[in-house]
Image (cartoon, rainbow, N blue to C red; front, side):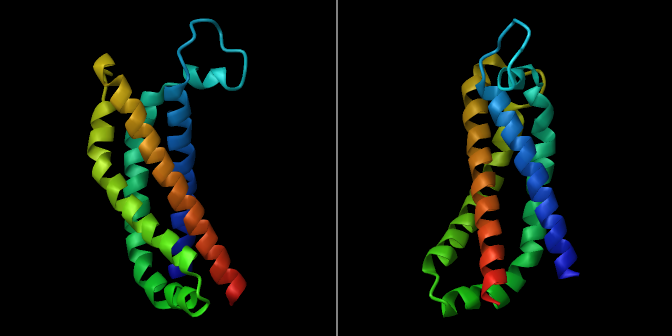
Length: 155
């Protein structure tokens, strides 16, 4: 059961990573009225506001699954990291926990900024909040994958 939940947690995390990255890049590229010709200029033609609610739902779903998996991490993986004296890996996971909590606290403001119709006065806040959430998701994904790899290599 835990293995299936871990796989589902990973799949949802990849979906979240793709959605928030695409949204952050689409919101960052200046709008070009001409027909988009390059790969990167096509990001702006994407409706970035369509990603607001799915990002919030995926973020919360990934957090809930992570909370269910957390006791197993505390009982199995963390002692292994301490036995192997991998303080950096353990500290990175501690930061992951804190960034996740801050990300959840930012979600209401993030969601409000992406509500339709988009207010022009929120463009700056929308861009910054999106990038903060995106960087949080990227950090959490990378650290999670590294910890899974460390546990797999050590046992």
